[in-house]
Image (tube, rainbow over all chains, first blue to last red; front, side, top):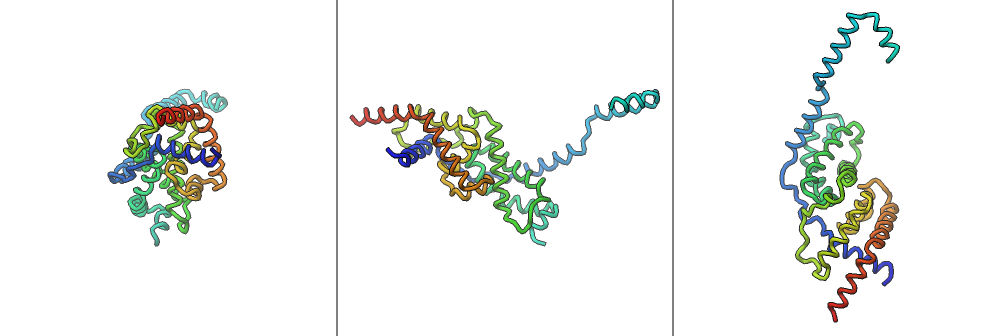
Length: 77
Length: 181
């Protein structure tokens, strides 16, 4: 068997073992799913976890109470 | 203003109109590659999400269909890379009734396994070119590579498959011969 025939045989075997996609029809409208994805993205963009707020507030409070720590903080940043 | 111009300008109604126009075609392309209807639905949404994010870069005089297909191909390829091969081929599409009975389930399993060991970019090209028999120029355009590179990848993939399947094919041939006797 030459190479071309070999390739054809391999293609035939592949098509037998891995039949082509038979049902390519989309069964439902995906727009609602798309809308959820868009909404999630917008929500996540604006959402800041509560822990970050607490951390920021704690840092500000600490700096107000100990203003002398500001140069040390800046040095370490 | 034309639909594509409105889409590129960020009009959500234009995006919805384009989604509704193209979702079936994008889904049909992706399901050819990933062969799993559930994953194909998710990837269709992922494709349009990428399209939505890249709307600023879209040229309204360009071909939206080709652009969407290319993004869909990339999304499907990312999926093939991400998903473990064992679960990549959930038999969503059962073996056809017209299948050659000479090919045993054992041989079918060997071929599937050999196919699944190929790197994702080769599986993509083999699926589209050899199984789905899509034209090379369409595959090249969708994958963002040249037709020559499509041919090179098919050649390499076939060589890898031949190597992996050599003993299996010999076995199948001997089985067939013994059946004929």
